[in-house]
Amino acid sequence: MRKCRDHGIQDFPRVVAELGPGDSLGMGLAAVISGADQYYAFDVVEHANNASNLEVFDELVELFRQRTTIPDSDEFPRVHPTLDSYDFPYDILPDEHLDRALDKDRIERLRSAVMNMEAPDSPIKYIVPWSDSSVLGRESVDMIFSQAVLEHVDLLEESYQSMRAWLKPDGFMSHEIDFKCHGSADEWNDHWTYSDILWKFMRGKRPWFINRQPHSVHLDMLKRAGFKVLCDDPHLSDSRIDKNSVARSLRNITDDDLVTSSAFIVSLPDAAK
Image (cartoon, helix red, strand yellow):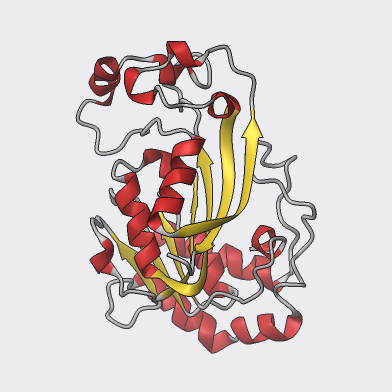
């Protein structure tokens, strides 16, 4: 949220949705603890465990109560994007706001919701699997976010279209996308050189893998889905491959793509589309 504030987004999101939370709903739990009214978590395969998420919830509540500083790049050197300041974000969460959010009765209700996410009125919803935009109402979400998830999505364009349908006209999206090989090659971008047939063989019958789509494809899909890119912050790495060595399906890859190993992208609905 602090990074989004840096790019002019001021309103505190009341309804948030996350793609691919994995085995911890920590980011979404932090959102509701700090004041959001509703959190939706979407995944392809069920990973979350109620007991472990309850432990995370209790730890997060204490961190917010203590106004603890944010773990920095010394503790998590591989996490992007980096922040200009890792101090507790009083500018986003002033004491008056946080005192209301951390009200004892409110926290107890949220804690109960962690253990009963299937309840119709639960402020925390874990939806697995999800397949299309109909799982949420149109223009019902203030913020959509993901962290190293969209590189795993097979139906990528359809997913961007679903997110556009969910997002309110004044909402926003925040995505950190990792374009690296995820252990499938020796060099970070050698997976782009594998033939399409070999890549299909490597994928096998896994329910999810990496989609190999580079930075420029995500930007194009965002724009086609009706988004305006507010911030595009790429992380660059040295490359030993060139465009002539990539797979046939990736021949439109750009020189910039070849050195872009990840990117933090903030986007808004484009009112003109």
